[in-house]
Length: 411
Image (tube, rainbow, N blue to C red; front, side, top):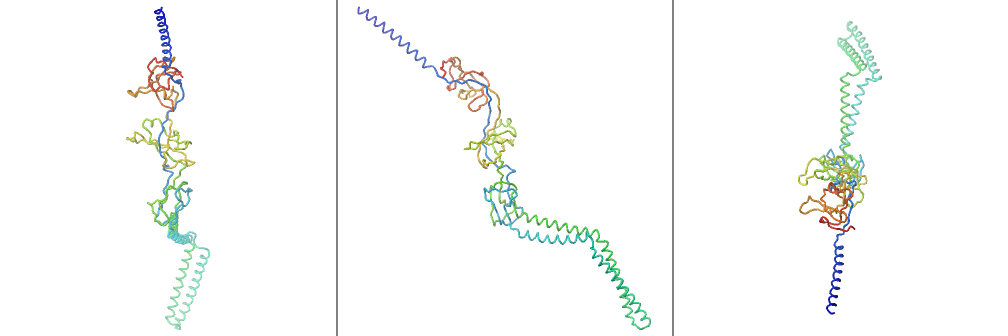
């Protein structure tokens, strides 16, 4: 009886142990399944961007050094660094007393030369002609009187009443009177005909020369006032009142900041994908707003150290948000196209083979490693060129390659 009870107890205990073992095994199998989060492979528009750091510079044609073309002493330097000046505004003056005196002297010389030229150009005035005619009439009257006086003295001389010297004097006076007639008639002829052509040419040349000298002295006087060639901001001031200035010594630098360019370095390989006029997004550190620029030039000189070529980007800077020397970021669209994409975190790399990239494909709660060929990265998405199809599901929270057939639980 005791043996039978002991046997029954052993059988019951064995059965209980078997049941507990089966229940424990079932629970361990459920807990051992890997829980994965998946994403669906899908097709969408992807954009390849290149991001470049760059520095802000004034455009070459929008910056000017204000320099005097003549030597002198500064008596006025108006704007300070940071001041805005208008195009044509007088910003610098030189001492100008010598230049003003030269202008006054040349103005007087031109007036005299013009008077001479006017006289030769327009001929004698009516009053001068009448005066010359009257001189002829007076000379003829004097000649007639001299002739009559000579004839009277001659008769007295023949009658031996007058001395011979009186007769000789009368002859001489007649000859002088006749010469005066000829001179008066010649003068009248000249007055009526006007000056000779060579005299007119000489007078005109003298007037032109005087005008040129006045123009030159006026231009020199104008050079004592230095004007800004553009509207802009004074970026640099190198001299002050009382200092000597000359052609090799700039006084101010004025920069037009309404348009600037960003100088950046473009990695080789991208230069063939970009073109002049292409739009660029410019961001300033600490400023959420973006500016729009355009590629103005892609250089040809290769920097062998960085393997880059220079690129210049023109940016409209109407609100003056870009300061010269500031470092900004330039983002340029290289390419846009439709492509299959997966999240970046689903791609698993290999330490042994950097060119090998794998995703864990999830099908019917089982995983299968798939080697893929990737393309461009657009934010958190990666283009898949080969290896997957539209609608496939891949694990995104497993950063290692799962053996084929691994059972998983999809979250």
